[in-house]
Length: 148
Image 1: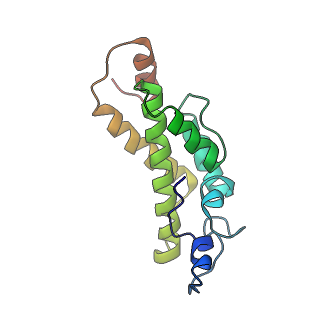
Image 2: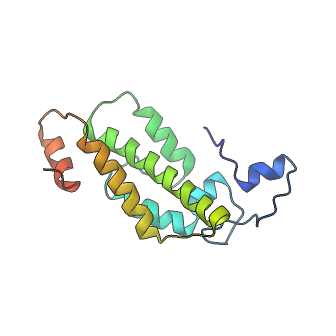
Image 3: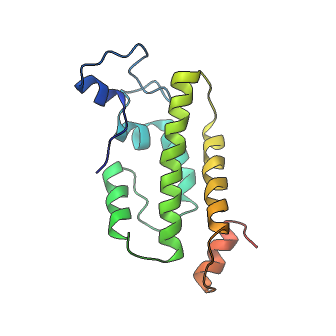
């Protein structure tokens, strides 16, 4: 599903010869691709490992297909855990892509802890803007996210 980002494996299929290296700029281990960038890259794996601690549902797998399929299968559920899982996944993908582009085009880099902090603070702000029904699951979620 998806995989529309212009990673190096996609550019190679278009026969475009980019002037920058075709390896992952987060780990310099493999070619830049969706599966590598978001799940096999050691940098991304550390981000995802820490971000999963905030989700608290088993849908958080370790492959693009597994996670996207899990998110799609629960897309119509409107409980706090599912909503937060979607927010964390979206923010993780967004900030990993931003980190990749910052390293590739601006020669700036952050630690994986800094990327996780961006994910956490972004999702926390979104959670704070939602009017939640009061129940045990929501109270537990607010405790995890340090929301009064």
